[in-house]
Image 1 (tube, one colour):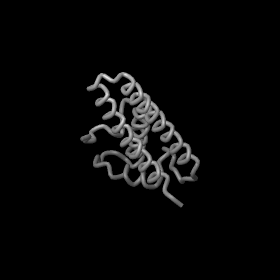
Image 2 (cartoon, helix red, strand yellow):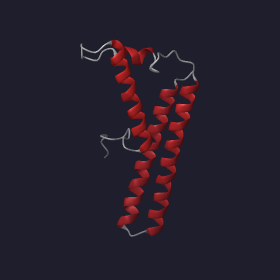
Image 3 (cartoon, one colour):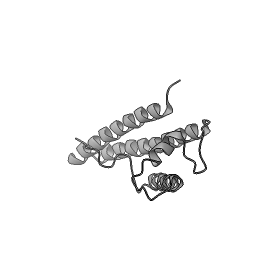
Image 4 (cartoon, one colour):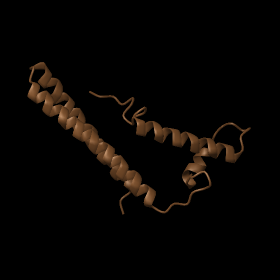
Length: 125
């Protein structure tokens, strides 16, 4: 069975490429003062962005429906391992895991509100 994360990653990449192509088409139409071309490219970008949001929701729903062993902070086995690698030796394992869970929740909130996007910092040419 295919890993949902890999399917999502490939799908998101395809949408990002398509958005970049539509953005190029928009800029080209802008150079030629082609309002119809600009409108068409803008509609393509809007549709692709909506598709990306829907894809994210589908991936989250699918992932959430999968049975997982989680601890009391909602962290799975891999996340617990990562949380426990926190370098502050004065923190207990529970404190490290709670901090990781809060940061994870904050990250998801920032993605949902658009405050953080996965494409930030990526190089576009």
